[in-house]
Length: 537
Picture 1 (tube, rainbow, N blue to C red):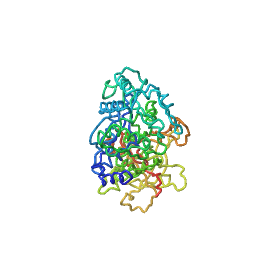
Picture 2 (cartoon, rainbow, N blue to C red; picture 1 turned 120 degrees about the horizontal axis):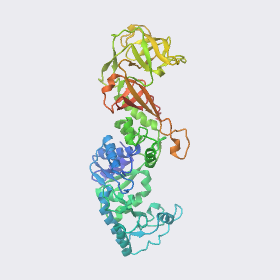
Picture 3 (cartoon, rainbow, N blue to C red; picture 1 turned 90 degrees about the vertical axis):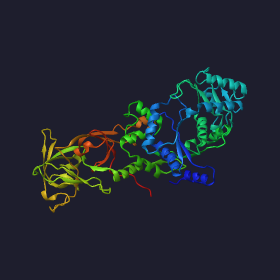
């Protein structure tokens, strides 16, 4: 994996600026991780592995009102599912005492002050990209007054939002992040790890560089929206007096077509019951794509192929599906199923005929084959039969022949209807000397279809998920773009062979698509057989 990050690392190692590589993955435990986080996980852990280094997992738990142990546990599972293991586990809250002492140091040095302006007033005083900000009327408080007020903030004397601690940098800086950023705010909220010890909490932009420096992180890799925050990152490391200074590097985040990965939006989908939970197979969360049956190997390969860029861009979601399909084509066992069944009676078949031999995986070496039991009554898919077929229809039609996968050629002779006019069953005759692999009938069937023995068929539920967002809908609120037909449920049949297979196993159902076993007799379509991704190369 070669990219501008690896070039920086190689130069740092070559020039002796670092002795080894130590990265970190620093999620905030305020929601479930999504596919964009998977790219960051693969990058941080991947480059460390590439250069014999290590990666820490550190939870950025500085906002107790939005964080929960549930999210912490889910992040553990997501990282392990992708095949990575962190070296050391930390929480930003581990450093709260040290961060507070650094804040006191800045107050004593006249580099931070307590401000009484409201959040709205701070925004007004900050100015714009074209106009410089103006100093807060509280900016020139004495060190003694600032220290007294800051200690009283810590002691819980003041209500939420009444005061903040701000860095004293430059209100005329062209970078708005350097215009006296807030370092601490008052928040009377119980923390999931520190309880009620603190009622003031450090801001991310102050916590993050200090945490990196304490741990000795060599390469702090983050997404591009933090590029403008890098001067503040460097300022915090410098003013706190760290000798070994970590450096921040930014890469473009992963954006997928017709996919929203905002935690706020995803949480809204869950809370308003638009999906079945964070792990709904339509969600772009890591647990969602895991539930859908995406293999971790395919997700990692996708992240590798997308690469690491310096400019934001959008990747076709079909590319991710292409990687999933490519992996499953080589690794998924084949089986037969029908999701919209029509019964077929083979009128001239007598029990005791030969069973078919079914290839387990034609693309895998030494995969072998297994028997598949034939019978007088079978199910085929409704899409594979037509009473009034269009031109060049090579599936089952009255008077036509079609091959049943790994079995015989059959000729359709008629249809038996129910009183309401719907199909009761289709009648066929089989050609005894047309057995697959030993066909001496001389009859050529242009079409081959899958089937399931009706006597032994297992009633099965198939869930087919479409896009969560309708690309044809144009609306500002993503909730108005939801696709009302994003889930279709079919009641069909599978081979009895699959009954003993474990939940989570993946299969290619011949001519249907790739499916994962969600529960007993229930399967989710992972991805269809047709690849819609068009390579530009």
